[in-house]
Length: 103
Image 1 (tube, rainbow, N blue to C red):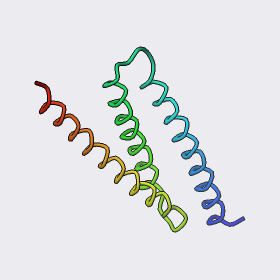
Image 2 (image 1 turned 90 degrees about the vertical axis):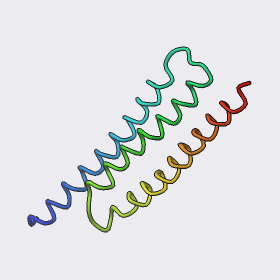
Image 3 (image 1 turned 60 degrees about the vertical axis):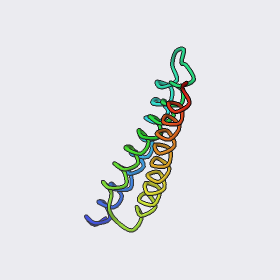
Image 4 (image 1 turned 45 degrees about the vertical axis):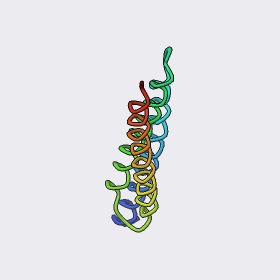
């Protein structure tokens, strides 16, 4: 095997390990955010925090690996970014709506 094929094999192995670490960390984040007695407001906030954490993990993966094979990670990151922005906008809107109808 030449050096380039060894490097590609190592890069593939590292990216697979990274994907597994993202999955495991996402599961741990989900467990941590839902541990204990939570009010309804805290549950919605934890959903938003989970999506933000997932966005950071996917963003780290998408921009640390370069090449044609990793373009799908950038597309997934873009999709997660849009979903996160929509969720943040919805949370701000609902919070403002709740304050408007407080009385």
